[in-house]
Image 1 (cartoon, rainbow, N blue to C red):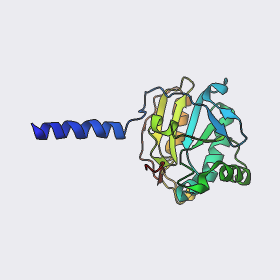
Image 2 (image 1 turned 180 degrees about the vertical axis):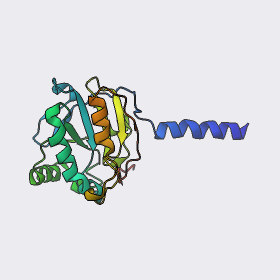
Image 3 (image 1 turned 135 degrees about the horizontal axis):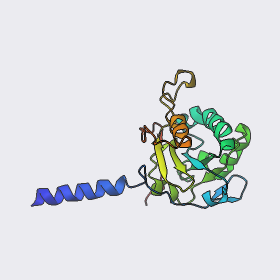
Length: 197
């Protein structure tokens, strides 16, 4: 009986730890502050055909390696109705480099063409189930999830990418097809949460 109880406890708590969105689920909207001081929600994008939500940050080496690729993806797909919305999920008290002041500097330096939002209070990333930076969620205009995971298969060298997971998913979704690869393992830094005292 004790073994059964322990098993049920572990199953229940594992589900709680890894709770979040799966392909086919409907994502919730949010209202987060952008680096320009204005709040941004998915509902602001009246003409969007979909959304590319990227949980990323300033300090993570993996996030830095993907900065230009994220910019390039926005420049390629925003005009087709699929804008990138970048969200920094880290607690700035744990990682000062990921505070709003530093986010503004990075966005200006890199000339981010997309909003860069702070998940203040860390409420959005757990609802989505993000665990890494970067971690990508591809939604259609109704906020249904079609793809979750990595941008591609080579974080360190963009010239040696073999599988462009996100781009393939976008192209299939645009064509009205079911996304072939719905999930991949996000590779990056763990999300830094507020220390419990």
